[in-house]
Image (tube, rainbow, N blue to C red):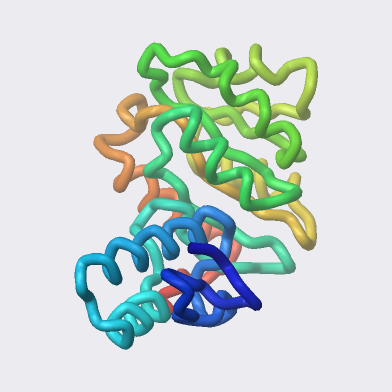
Length: 202
């Protein structure tokens, strides 16, 4: 099961053009292939699978596109609470301004080092900001922010046309927020109010 001639292809059957998916990053395509394979092998109708694939817009707070302004795209990945989830999120982009941090659950944040291939500036937030700074102090430009509003202001200043601003904390939200959803909603609200990006509801 693979992408063949621009189509998601499962069991040698072309289901849908990749360009017709709402989300087309590498992990989204792999997830779509996996879901379609399970659905087909479970007896789902091909047309139903095509319809779901064409309309699925992703899960809230998981690499969710917020909007674009002045050539900069903004994404909310607040559901990312482990270093490995940050690696998965960042791997789909180039020229990333990454907002990362929160309350570390005792995980090794050195796992994050491969993100430097995709990140141009790191904004460290929350209780883990010092730990994150130690990991990247020799390899990346780093800013520390004391609030989500400040972090977004820094990201706005550091970003330029063609960049992606990505909130992908890699840590829990419980230093500043009650849940990852609350953190993601605050991020989206501030982005919307600060730079005028309208939340993408398509």
